[in-house]
Length: 188
Image 1 (tube, rainbow, N blue to C red):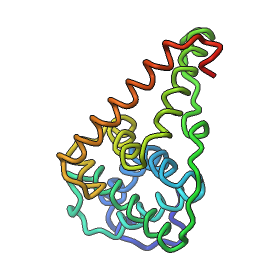
Image 2 (cartoon, rainbow, N blue to C red; image 1 turned 30 degrees about the horizontal axis):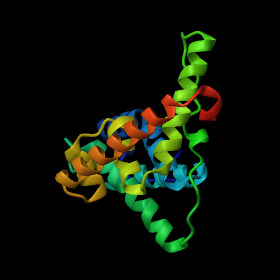
Image 3 (cartoon, rainbow, N blue to C red; image 1 turned 180 degrees about the horizontal axis):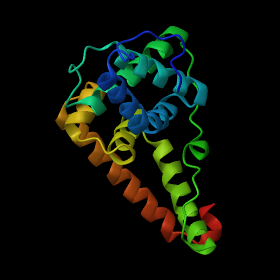
């Protein structure tokens, strides 16, 4: 992620601030792009939102987001995506296969195939959930945010976050159990 031509707070005159921004970028760029991709369905739109998020971090006074950097970044990124979405009024479908396409070191090809098959089923079931349930599941399990942090990002109450997670996981578990009872040739 480049900040070409930027003269924000993270300048050479403040090396501690520059290091803080650099560390935040290294730690949160990939998770934010993944999160933004889940909301936009488009890699370039996701990258744009994340770049805007880090530009806004550079503009923040030092200390303003200390202690809650992760929820602040996810909230700013989410708000930027929704602002653009409102402006464009253009919705696109999420391609779940593109989102989770990572090779894992170590397991045998058979284990990898079984894991991919199960992951594909989970992703397909996850894609069928309402958007608000999908979002809280991703924030909790892909980005390891707490209920309080998810509530801050989504502007929902902690109770509502808990309810959405409970409902989503119950639905996921039930549908996955139904699929696993089917013969492999029928699962698809």
